[in-house]
Image (cartoon, rainbow, N blue to C red; front, top):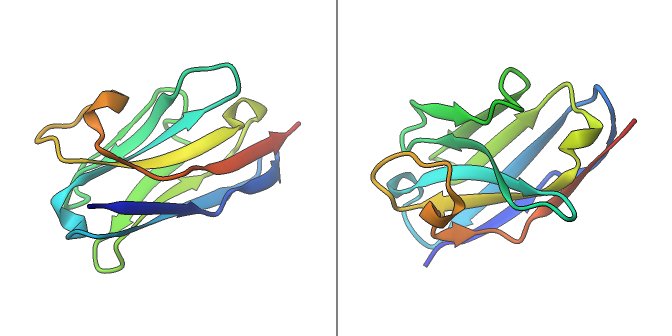
Length: 124
């Protein structure tokens, strides 16, 4: 089984930056795709970014493209989300997730493993 633990959330002013980390354990990290999702109060969970097993391919939601960067270090069993130029509308609980799917998907149902989430709050 796979365990995922996020860290790095917090309170930041608009225009600031944060880097989220997600440490994985329980299975060979490079054997599954990784993604980040977020959920704001009253909203459904939404896709933020995803990365292939090798890290060679990345995918982003339009709302974060150009501001957020997903990366992974398979030697450290960790995936990252670098968030720059943060906006108040980025405020949410951010979740990392792992997928055994062969192909990329932005749908949460395609992800098999989930972390507990980390709160990101962006003040205006």
